[in-house]
Image (cartoon, rainbow, N blue to C red):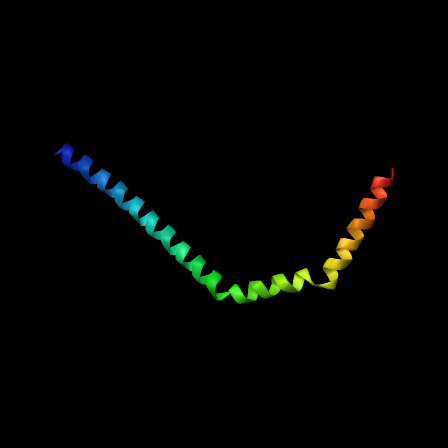
Length: 72
């Protein structure tokens, strides 16, 4: 009788592991769908940051700070 109970416990552990794998797979699928849906939005944000006036201003300020610190 005890051999049967041990086998049932081992089977339940395997089932739990399989459920975790399925949950992880579902999360990955949801993440991939979100990336595909928002791909155009994200690529548009990247191009606006590269050519934006804010980035040029920050770059200029950092260059000025670098020159000031390198004088000493």
